[in-house]
Image 1 (cartoon, rainbow, N blue to C red):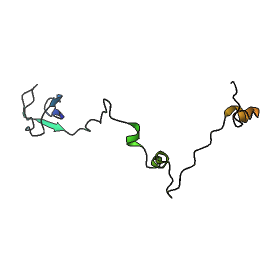
Image 2: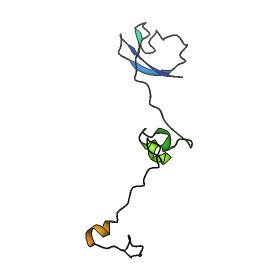
Image 3: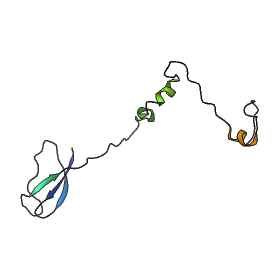
Image 4: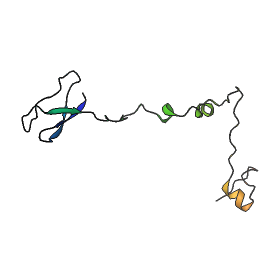
Length: 104
């Protein structure tokens, strides 16, 4: 059930009330008793995702589906991106690329 906001033109009293969409609009102000009440148009509420069952892959951009499938748009297997060791760039070390383990 949506929450509607009402405002009285006579006394400027405003309030919110939980009503069914099928309910009649309120006409009488609960504060002053005059029939000067009107319903305001609100922005509504946002969507709240709670609980398990929502995954980050459900809302990925279309470009990331190529990476997830492992194929490019031509149907050929995608090449994995080569990772470079940050230590190798600064020190010239070739231990990682030659299969030699190294302590950081």
